Image (cartoon, rainbow, N blue to C red; front, side, top):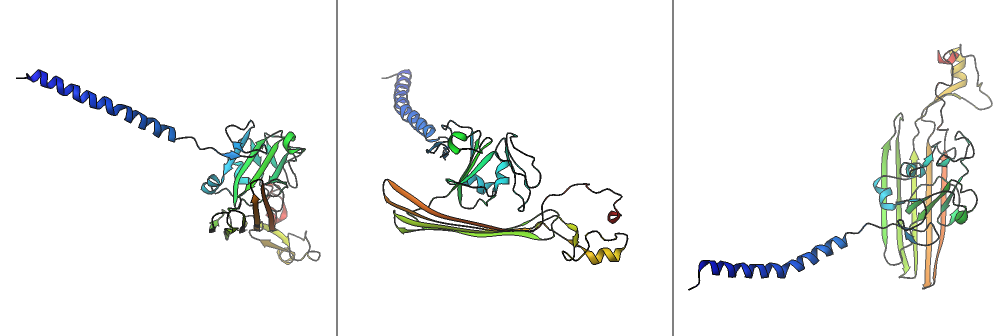
Length: 306
């Protein structure tokens, strides 16, 4: 007859064998789950070749379409909030916004100035336009100098807007809209648009189109605007209220802006070695007054301020 100690010892051996048999499987499973959790890689083409952001030997910041959608980034002024060393002075639609990287610019950042040290590209096309970031895959900001790859005018750096490519396999569409309010504005702003993609010949030919309308109501009041240009007096007798009202008027929210942005692209890939895209980009801005003010520029003794 077996003793209780022998029975307990036998059971212990069996339990140990079972645990040892399952431990390697559990360890492999744990290693597999850890290996599956990789850091997300952002592909950039700043060096004219595709590579991950971590491997590119340049000082570069990239904003993906997901980040721009989550943070409501729609223009270059918004990009500057997320890129270290990048400064954009928002002067409204009437004046170009100077782009300054690491404090490098060739003139002042006041009205009608341009940093002149940063080049901007839409895809592979060099241009300067404070464009709306609609249907853009990512924005790449290269800290300068970048003269080797992008030529003169890149002492401060270069900014590349990479549009979304035409999808040759799937049909997709998106409609969006927004209503917003500005501090000190009497009206509400609005924005709306759509993006549409469709293959014409699956895997070979496709088209992509986008349209966006943006209306900024403005927030700066012009208190002394002439009633009729060339007729009304711009400097009437301000001690006479009747003469002032006959020649001058007030305009509320004078720095409004309406911007229409559109793009259409046709992509053709007849073979493995040929991938061509024909694009047309259009942007029109109807801009009202300047968005620049000079605080306390007038003396308190000025007659019309009394």
